[in-house]
Length: 336
Image (tube, rainbow, N blue to C red; front, side, top):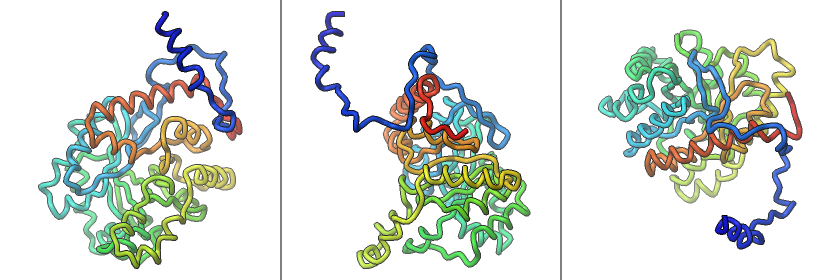
């Protein structure tokens, strides 16, 4: 007791918050709840499987040297917290099947959580044109995955020194896929998000979810520019600042739903891109009129590169924080 009181005195002057630094998104209501449990009250169904976590592992690792270790750490966390997971690009598995153990995560995940393979829009267009989708279906079955994520990345491919070119509008390619593909499909961007017309077009399709991958997190167009020569970087750098934040995309989605509710076949969102932690995630989740998960990539990747224990500690605190939000915070600008 004496040590605690001494700490309070010693730290009192260092623990004052200037009112200009207050988070003005929430009302804090301390009177109406007891302390929560360590896990939030959360239920969500995706691809016919029930999730108990608001967080989604957004696609991040493809054919990298450390992919196996990273993916296994992420899969262990998903099994523990009943989180869903999207793989990074699985293109490497068609060219080098010996890489399959780095992506074969169902034995770690178990059967309860959704698990999605991943293909780029350029590679999807090529597979459809060459009638090679059977190869992707075979791969998905080998992974015991629940479906396929399609990442839309025209700017990334354009900036990538070894990038592929698309010859058809992505919405047409996705529609072709949905006409013949028997498994759930998620569509995502890769770090710049998408505008109102693109969201409207996707929401009209029978997708399992749309993953924002908004501007504010890892921007893969910038990643490719940083890999390019200095002259190209000087010319095209401004394009990396084009895009939409996760908050803006939530607002656009809400407006579209109010206008076209009966026309939309996609019912779920994965809100990602610059979501720094549970406070950002909870705010965007509560603001969204669509049922939503909160996608994280770089924050999870950072910990998964260190160890499972580091990742587990981070996720444990994220879930504890979400539970506190549910008990004590309310949005100031309620939209629901």
